[in-house]
Image (cartoon, rainbow, N blue to C red):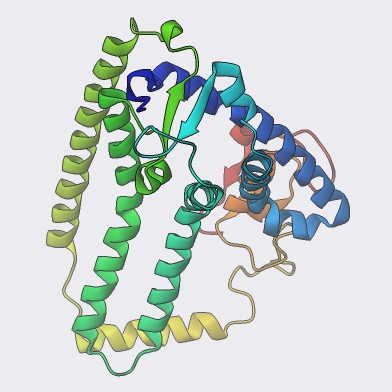
Length: 301
């Protein structure tokens, strides 16, 4: 017997996801603290993986033990197959979790690998390389828009909140379907149409900016390409492009990029210090309290 009539609404699914994220954040914080105790350098390098690991561990534990997640139990929803007849098999659920929390990083890594291989290739003409590279950049830039478009469809039509659920056909049904909230449907649909409009305006602005940049960009010549290559070669061969004796970031232990200074006077990479401050509002060297608003990016340094 089909349970389509008991399909979970938008409000229940969103509350379930939000509840799960609270518990996942607790696991992520514990993993991050443990990694920081082991090694500060490893913390900076691998801290971004803590969230992915926490998400996969959290959901895999529920799947392997035939349990609802805490969010699903809180809202009273369960997963069913694409026909709304039975529970999805474990392999399909595991695949959905891997796609949801590991799919996007894999896509970015694959695109970066393709760009590296493209640069190493001597068989392609420069014009072909530029064309393929533009396509790769287009795919990379499209990922957030695809995610936003899918979210808009969920707000409008309901059903599947995650792209992975749409790919695997997994649905949600409400156990106590007589408690389903119908008064919020109109609000979610309006939100979906507003999100679509915002997405369309953003795409139009990006396209216009791209056309303007293409018109202003000078066409590369052989002389300018040679000059640029020489300049890059001189820069790469220099011992210290910053001209300071200790041009190493204390977080990534690499050459400072986009040098930024904290209010205590210590120098870091712009991205490094902001990633650090997402977790702790203290200087990683002297432990003085610092804020993101007080970080100054040094220009022409």
